[in-house]
Image (cartoon, rainbow, N blue to C red; front, top):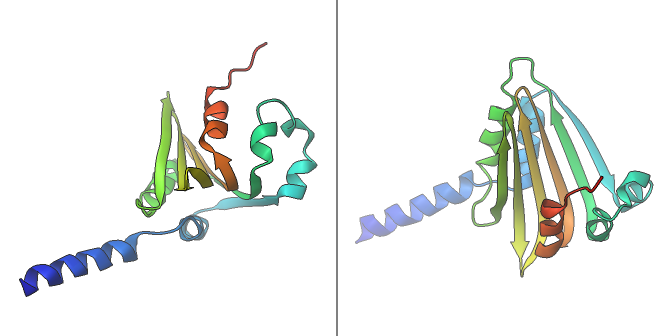
Amino acid sequence: MKKVLTFIISTALCLSVSAKTSNEVMRDIRHNNKTITIRFNKLTLAMIPDLHDDLWRPALRHIHSGTIIVIECEDGNAGKSIQKSICELDPDTYQTLTSVTDDDETVQLIGKIRNDTVKELLIVVTDGGDATLIRLKGNFTKSDIQNIIDYKETT
C-alpha cells in the first residue's frame, strides 16, 4: 500500500513539475528560437484604426494586454518547436478550444478558462517554416470567441 501511495504522489509531482504556464512556454520559445516579440496593452489597441470594425469591437473591450511572438526558422522547424512547447502547457489549466488545418497552415485556439470566462487566449499559427504565438489576456466570453471563429467577411 505504501508503494502504491508513493508511486501516485511521485507521479503527481512529476506531472505538476513538467506542466507549464503560458509565461514559461513563451520564455522557452524566445530562448530557443530566433523570434520577434511584440507586446501591447489597451492603449496600443485603441490607436490601431483597423481593429474597430464589427468583428473586433466586441472582443477588444475584453482585452487587457497581449503578446505576439513570431518565430522565423530557415530550416522549417519553427512549427515543430512551438508545438513541442505548447504540449508542455498544464492540461488542467489550458484547454484546446478549436484547431483548424488547411494545407500547410494550422491554427489552434487554447484557452485558460475560469468560471465560464476565458482569462487567457493563446492563438498558435504554424505554416511551413514560420510560426506565430499570440497571447491575449482579458475576460472573454465564449460567445465572443465563437463570433470571431464564425465570422465571415462579406464582400
